[in-house]
Length: 107
Image (cartoon, rainbow, N blue to C red; front, side):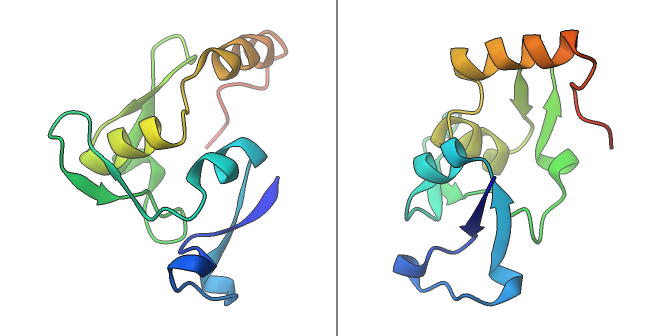
């Protein structure tokens, strides 16, 4: 895990604790300096999911097999695409984690 600036410094974010969260290295790299992404359903720009202020379960849920994340809102859908949260590498990793009994994550 790495420290992620929810609002990136290049976009006017600060080092304040309220703007910091933990993210996996891949998500942090794919996010870069972005604060918005395009909702694939509407084609409109929307804010990326903010884990400091928003409830994960409002915007996302797990597929029945626990291998993919489903976006339930425009923010969820856009964040999924922008951060590549369902790419093949992650799905393979989730299969391994599921076999080990550590996925999907507990509440």
